[in-house]
Image (tube, rainbow over all chains, first blue to last red; front, side, top):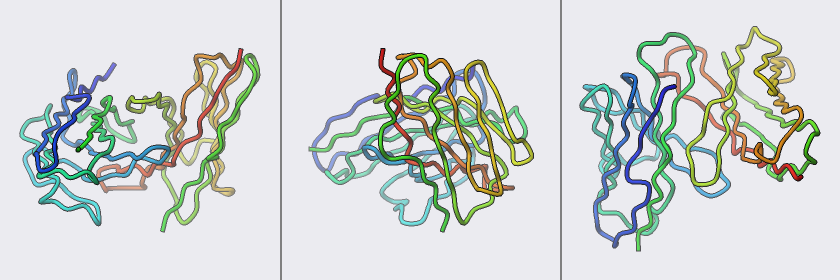
Length: 118
Length: 114
């Protein structure tokens, strides 16, 4: 089945540090990947849509200079949280859709990154 | 704005019984609806998709219904097992375009007791 690998699974770092999270589709190509943020017992909140070879589309209220997204290949998207502060602590999850499929296909999720800023 | 409601309280049932989870939505007309399972500290895993012109979908012990008049989907797990304990998320799919961005509910936590 379609596998999405997200790395690292957990990051603990000091305030002011920039953190990069990788999202890879292992056995399929993904023109589009999605980045979500999830707080405890809350729904997945879409932060941005990552498009291969073009700029990401950010949801309202998400700072694009704070959350840098790069989608340089059909199998890799990265999210960089720049100058992270304690309020950025959260569970970040990526997902990808198989570009080779059509219609209303499911999204395949990574296992998330638990980010803790001290 | 769109709103999705799933039971915020945990659903506790006995092993072997049927679990029924509800997803209600307002101010939206989805082309399809998906159900995902999420375990603690993990990403969601896709379970079932049902389109607006489908009333019911089944997969092994799982069954999903979709009532566009009531704006509601029901998710059933028959012969439930402790291994079914997890949080179940419903997600609404757009009619067209928008990169197929999904709108997720907050999920309902299911606990199946032996």
